[in-house]
Length: 439
Ligand SMILES: NC(=O)N[C@@H](CC(=O)O)C(=O)O
Ligand SMILES: [Zn+2]
Ligand SMILES: [Zn+2]
Image 1 (tube, rainbow, N blue to C red):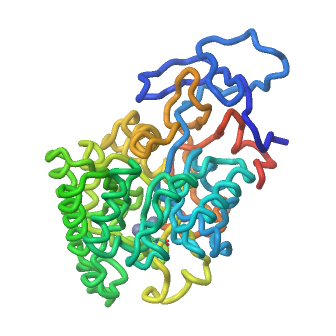
Image 2: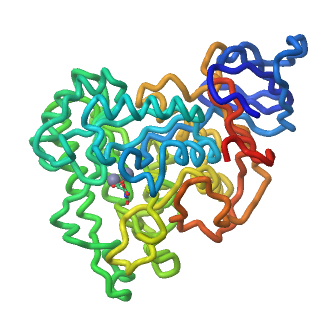
Image 3: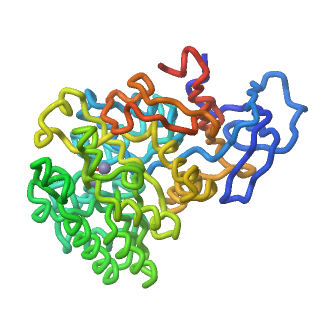
């Protein structure tokens, strides 16, 4: 039985420690005491009470940090719970997850925030950082009490699922951001331009007879937010960036010295709207899968530093909801379990360096969201993931720990496997374990 709570101690032998943020790349052992890194190198003189794991020469990197996931609790526990979401996270190598506010009740009150944090600690698998709502009830009218939410533990604010409704509301939110120091995350979408569209607007939507969502729907709100940011200051973070135009706008804003960051998700750099033909509603999400020029621009944005991090936008939905007509099904796909492997495809194709991928998935999200994780250093928190880069496997239904199965990667061969995950000095996931932690 694995230790389910508290800070753990262990000796992990025979690994390649790899942390580009700390410029660590060395073979050896790593000793963790009470949840923190004590020593690395060759370690042999430890007390017999400390558990020893053999890493088998695999790659040890900082635990991944996801700044954008939907765990659905409270309110939609039939899709996902904090417990099943945490299991999905650690099996994908994520040890820190920021969870969105579009729950029921909405996370617009400190009691909701505190309850999420309490539940996550009770589950004890990964760290959960709640994101508070920008507006009460996500209604786009009145600002939430950001200061009380921050005191309760919110690390950022977003109305995700919906855009921050007006430029004026964004202005007020960013003014609060200058006070709290916490980012405002926007789901950039002009809902009048999307106008009930269900997939990307283009050749594929025309041939399928489905109503399209143009790139401009995303781009005009990114442009709006950047101009408001120029007025107010504060921290602006663009969620799930998917368009060529959006990448261009963020690149220019950074050149102008504005405090803007952006994330994209694995599906936007691996798939296009062609996937809707084969994967149907498992390829339906918002923003929608775009076209090849967008996919290429997103990859360029990742490699040149325009896009700061990879987030999953893990958005579980039950199969009875997804197994409907395309128009009727909800937007969203799960992503925690496949994110690293999809990112690793860019390393295999030579489009991204491995060190860059690790920075995009661990150090950068932690640094920009001011989370005390994302690196391997002496006295740092012992959150790691052990990866076997040589493994390939087919994604079957039982690959997922999430409660939902809505993934466009079902049936694909993927490379790079998460072998073990450690959080707070405890082994929280072990793929070779028959009775995997909490499964
Ligand atoms: N991305 C999605 O398609 N869906 C998300 C909402 C969101 O991220 O906008 C959800 O909550 O299901
Ligand atoms: Zn969104
Ligand atoms: Zn989302």
